[in-house]
Image 1 (cartoon, protein in one colour):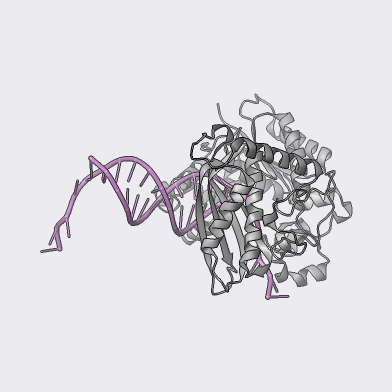
Image 2 (cartoon, rainbow, N blue to C red; image 1 turned 120 degrees about the vertical axis):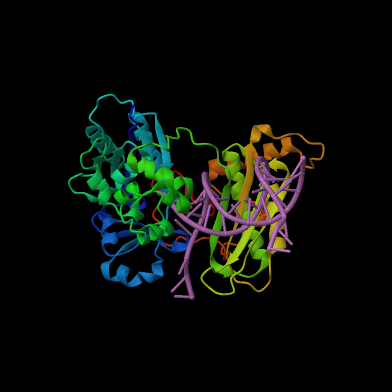
Amino acid sequence: MASVFALVDCNNFYVSCERVFNPRLIGKPVIVLSNNDGCAVARSNEAKALGIKMAVPLFQIEDIVRKNRVQVFSSNYALYADMSNRVMRILTQFTPKMEVYSIDEAFLDLSDSGGIDLTEYGRKLKQRVEKWTGIPVSVGIAPTKTLAKLAGHLAKKSEKAAGVLNLCRSPYQEKALASVKVADVWGVGRRYAKFLTANGIDNALQLREAEAEFIRKKMGINGVRLINELKGISCYPLENSPPSKKSITVSRTFRQAITAQSELLEAVSAYAAAGAEKLRKDRAVAGVLTVYVLTNRFSDNYYYNSAAFNLPVRSSDSSELIHAARKGLEKIYRKDYQYKKAGIILNDLGPESLVQASFLDSVDRRRSKKLMLTLDEINRGMGAGTIKYGAVGLSRRQRWKTSFNQRSKAYTTRWEQLPEVS
DNA sequence: TCTGGGGTCCTAGGACCC
DNA sequence: TCTGGGGTCCTAGGACCC
């Protein structure tokens, strides 16, 4: 039985979310920025047409923004997550065999859908999502995930496709592949694109026909899989229930550079507390906490360092993780540097249910668990950040805090549920 | 002056063992 | 100059994704 995948991809997702609640933005150039209003991470088609590239810093495009009255928004993650859930819920009505691939993309497995007209099916799906959520989507249909991504890419660009392209048994498949630059193939990043074009491989068709051993030497086993996927041999099955996470990271770039250890301690305490919250949400515990700091990566005198802290017993207790982060920071802190970013990484994750009781354990696990449950309940009910740890600090104008100066309203949530660290 | 955040996988090389 | 041959495990770094 030949496999069939559909990729459903929300167009310019963050921008589209803003437009749903602010229709006067339709037809105008719009961008959405990363944290601290740093880079453009989503652009409307009009903004792309002005030459605004993905992830370009705002300060480099100020002229374009001013001259063309580009509408600029800070990220509003609470809104985007909510809209994403709405889209995904609609897709599950079509088939339960769905993989949520990212906040704005999902794969559907349509292998056993009988003799239906797949293009027609894709159109129906597109129409329903747009009608019910206001978010425009593109649909690519093909025998492998890589080809489905490629079809989706073309569906967006082609007038004729009108947002839906089916490459299964298509007589145009070779032509389609030839029209896609190798850099736009899923799995080919900047480095590989440079290598491939330097070797005369400029488009997806040429990559498909390339010699596997040559590709393997440079790109490893994934390069070989990539070629097979382009040939229509499926190497990446649908991940129906994604495996549990192997790590959790919480990191932020600071609004302003920091030199004082006391301020860094507040920042990493906040990140550790946020990491602990994520763990509890996943019903998981971590065995290792790594804390890291760095200075401006674009300047000389760059400093980066990290320290790992092994917890005696795997844990998701906020105060324990905060303690580990602070210990780690004290090891790597050096005076007189202008710190721009810090973060914590939680590793060696396991299910909360498997925590072993230990005689050496200095923490009363039952008491800790009860306290964490209460804390999470209050913050869920009354808004994130209602209860915080003292280590995070109390001042309103902390220099490490992320800023969002052009954020839209919380249209879809009851409270102003926009945590400082989320 | 101003440059995001959160993940995964693979590979090479070193440590260590028999 | 010659100076075993494997295996396994771990880690750092590099590449990719959105």
